[in-house]
Length: 557
Image 1 (cartoon, one colour):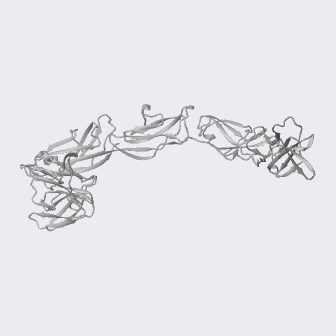
Image 2 (cartoon, helix red, strand yellow):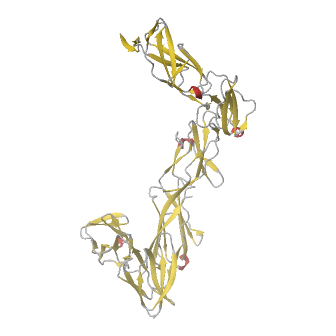
């Protein structure tokens, strides 16, 4: 099929065959100085004798052959087109081809590759660095290598082989020049780093409960093919943990307190890394001690060393009095009060299956044994253990003296300390400015009163329970009270952390108190829980005393 077009007085026949330009070499990027060949292919016209015409950027070129050969340079960049006419018929030709763009990069930038291909290479391993000039594969290059800005002597080949060691750590660069000067020099490559491994173990201190565990992860950043070893610090040295505890991914479950670190070993080369930083694991033990701070001569006393959170652990207990060991190694220390047993008591606990896993010694706690009943009395208004900080309460000292010292003994958490005594004549009002737990009693010369536990709370709910021991046989009512003074309904009551009742009226009544009712009580309403308070039971044969509940926190060594 032909189309006839009249131009001036000539008749030109346009052949529908459309030429296509191809390029050799066919790399996606041509660099300055490279030889390239453009070919004008008339598709379907392979058996025809053609004369070819070329133009660049719409300007005619003198070449009239099928092949256009040139050396890539910035001046030859542009859009190339070609067409063809039959040699035996000047007036019969193809259309112009689609434009073909030639863009030569001014410089070549080599890239360093390595074998093995791990992202980091480590001491002792055999490595090969290769300088690849992209697009210049057919060129005869001379190579140059730098290490930390210093030229490597005698290294003018494409490959550099070395054994990684401390002296080879650094940044490597390469460049290339044409041996026959047919191409300009490349630029320097990006740096390739040969480095020691950086083994990481999450630093800092982690605290877990007794019986719990935490994961420690040891890793070499961006690198595979490692196995890991973990170490725990003993008194004299670092002890390696058995390998069965270490996962394949460098993660270990730790249930013992202590200081840990790790290191890695390359499986292919046996290279061992430096030690990681240290991670500290602390085991928290809550130890509850039930003690009579002051007791009467002849009374039965029981001291209990309770490790909270370690109920499922088999513990062995140790007791000291006045810095001397006691033969008892049970949880309970029981004795009859006498002057010889007055003193400072401490306890600790150790796992029976792990001699090196234990609590520290408790804070010193004083037991004072008294020969005369209290000759004065201290009363509290309102008569309850727990109070809100928005309320004021009155303490009254009564006895033969007209002037008293009010002793305040703080028992907040692990804080055990005396506040400066307040001098009062008979009564004093205490403004509750902050949450606090304390024991109060009155002194005047040789006179002293009973002691009372008082705790103040800023919000939530409180338990209304008696300040003084309740005589056996009498009734007592426990209430759950909100800060507004309202008594909610549907309240849960607990004794020694065990649910004992769900009361719709918000109160729990014990009609006839017995010794078995003695214990710690608390209430819970709508997700809010009160503090717990000790309710003591008074037998007819016993004199007045008071009981204090102390919560301490220790760390396993």
